[in-house]
Image 1: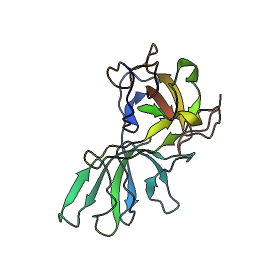
Image 2: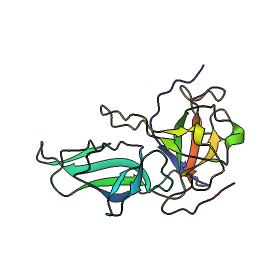
Image 3: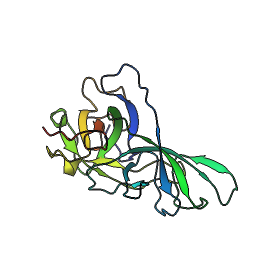
Image 4: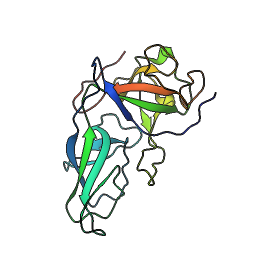
Length: 200
């Protein structure tokens, strides 16, 4: 059955060469004045202010992937936890942001803008596109951009495997058809704050 384009961002899948999918979240900060929504599964970058922000498509080096956020809410008068930062409602100061930044982290991500990704694409590098996040559940709309697939060592993600191939994490349903566009890929960081650049 052909895949349907319903991207969900970068979903943690485990660690490279690890038998158990354990990782620790790193606490960072988002400026309370940052009016851009940042969703669970979005790539983020570190700014020269020390805060993090949503990465833009075409970004090369990233800091990690947003997992959840917490802030003192102006409207509710208490600390709230959320899978995404809506872009407002925090008291002056900063928003606690928890990101996945382990250099060995792997992620499941839907592919788009061409494809399908095939076995021969394993070991190549790619960028991402942001898509549209969903406020109802806080989930990212980011996806792996097939059109950027290259050997360029500055691209932020490396393709490890693709749906429909042996060794790919067991998946059923949308994205699991390796013969049509919008299939899932398993990726790891390539150009990230704690990981050196690699080419082919």
